[in-house]
Length: 248
Image (cartoon, rainbow, N blue to C red; front, side, top):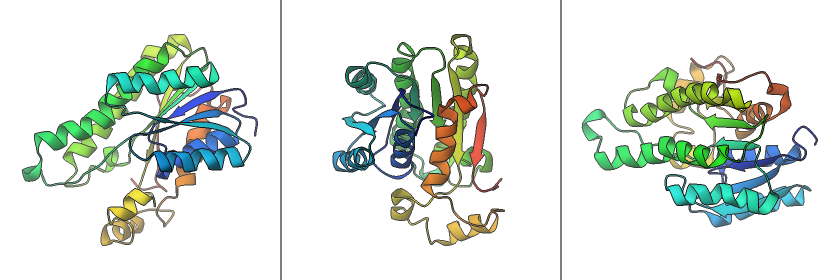
């Protein structure tokens, strides 16, 4: 419980699933964590309670990353509560799958606003507080490599995120700020269960193509994010790591 001692982290979309696991993992290594949520305050409070019960420090902060004022507020909460900011995990995201004939402007803007604009707004707010050695970790997706059918909008957002990761790594490198992307394959979460992916023929088909032979677990992703947040990854930036059990 020392790799991130004295560090402060913001994890967006951390009230459940991968985000919650990331928040807990960062806290377990000593970071003080802002657990952001868009709608589920109860979920975020549960994550905070688990962190504090384990001896860590965390606070729940509401905010929609796709709105400039609220994105700024999330970052401001880190400074207000802990006095600094060292780690930003851009985890907030939504997904919908539909054939190209069914794509709507409303769907496009909703998904791009959260998955892409939200990352830009939150990162913009964070960089002014970052010092040397700060780390941004974007949560992308394996879909940007797999490009599955019926996912043009969602996959488009994750392709954009891959590109943004590369741009910001170069743009912020002179300030010794690292930017990397962790791109999960299919992961067993509340969201993928609710969407009907887990246990479906779709999941079975993906697992059949996965060398390690199973769907991901949230801790599979959280541990890689924690590595990127730590000094163990101090010489790594601009990387996109597909954490999908070998699925390509």
